[in-house]
Length: 387
Picture (tube, rainbow, N blue to C red):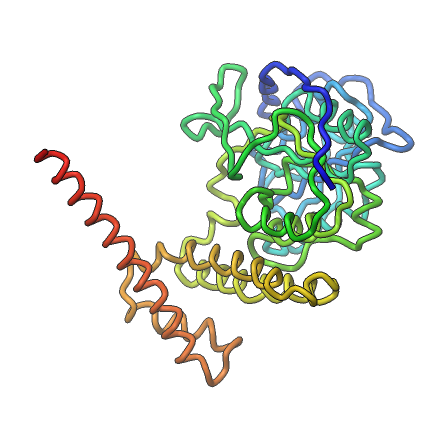
């Protein structure tokens, strides 16, 4: 299907919302707001020990110019004041729904799935508890979704506070951050429905697997049984790969509606030990590849075209090897050998020494290429200086 384009929509650069007060409970209590019978969108916020950020996160939704929403906060076993803050905000606004997991699941998948099961909106949005929406985010995305009858509205960029600012204020300066590559949409664009092209776009980073800077039609997710798999990290990459392969209508837009903040206590940053990180990244490489391969095995296109079945597996394994490179930069192969063997043993059994060797060799040769490239650049600079 050829791309279809609508009229360009000129939008002013969105301004970030003002943060909530440090203690929402101390604000004057406004009249209660009743939840709509059928909210247009369910905003799902998984949270764990997010007392510092959760107030401003929720307030960024409450302050939207579009009001027909419900906020589903799924607490994943917090031990700080997160639950109290959310509960007090929910008493003042009936659009906030709070549910709790009594035991921390260790990842975002379980609370997001709980939120999906609870959701009632026509559309679904995912908001991380340390991030924020711009004030017109929901109005912009829902308008486009309705106009284009979209299953997914896919934005390509986020606002990123300069200097890794955590406490966003109206005076905070922002820069635009993009993870994707290739030509960016300049107006709402209906993406191709050719699966071969979509898979290539996904694996080249053109349709990157963030879940939070998009909205999804709820019935589409439920009909295709698309949910988050039990992965320690990058569950959003696998989730969005399923969406890319399944959604009849994906609309890309140039809108910037999401404010991403660095949180030093997030799941991926709190794994400070080598053991924790290697376990998580090996889990991603092997379990993530298995989940993706199982999904593709049920689709005729991938069965009949194995070259496209290999692309996503290669992509997720490469992501793993790139992320673990930092360990080999800091520690010797001898120091890491026992850890790698121990981690791979549950997957490789008697073949662990062989795969451990390959694992280390890949990083060794990668480092050689990096060093060779550095030496080439230094020599080119010297030659250029002598001319």
